[in-house]
Image (cartoon, rainbow, N blue to C red; front, top):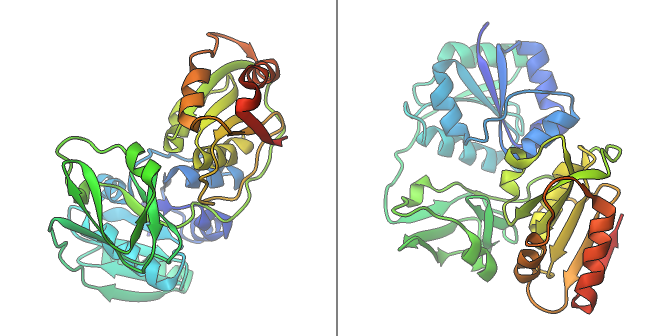
Length: 339
């Protein structure tokens, strides 16, 4: 079937070779990425393809019935739960899902049967038709398919750790309130950004680690250039990065790990300001020239703001600037990693 759009969700589909296999066998007209870490994995796998930084349901609504979602869930059950959750949020309450965790094409609701059948036959995947249950629009939001001990994200920020396979939350005056199965992370709750009058079902929520594979390292790209800042917003990495960046000031433990992971393939070092509350959401890897410090006096936020105020305009010699700032901070920080 010619002319369909393949929307890829998550880095695992690239890391495990699923995208290469599906593209090679089914020849989609175009491939689009959903997710910032997936974009990193795509580049490492040699795919230079659009990444609109949109949720899967938004992209499916944009490309219509001639689109399929490629996913590799962390388990068979979570992959199926994810598919129905996406289908519930599409305009037509339907979806063609290629689920690689169990070699299945799911046809959700009144989706494109011809496309689903074609993908099933060509890939030798099972074809399973499933109804889409109504989205229960209550004041509560249930996140299913969690693994106890894994992080829970809201709008790209970790708000806590799952303590059950289902986590229930609600909103009160734009504040997230845990109801069941969630151990809150206080700093995360303070940093999560929720627009005024947000609906709890409009929030982007996911659980689990971001990627289990180390990035493909590249040689350091440059020593002089501009410095950009990623302050607890690693999900904004791709909209801020450019060819003239010599290094990135990152603020926050997980922010440093995620940004360092994504910038490693680009050969861009980070100067990470942390305070020891990392959740281990991604395998760490840093480019040569990276320095990670831990705050001994004050929070990473406070030291980060201080450093931001001292970033020069224009071109900077990265190593000199980092060394000067570490000397200026003195015994308020300790270097925990230097690459």
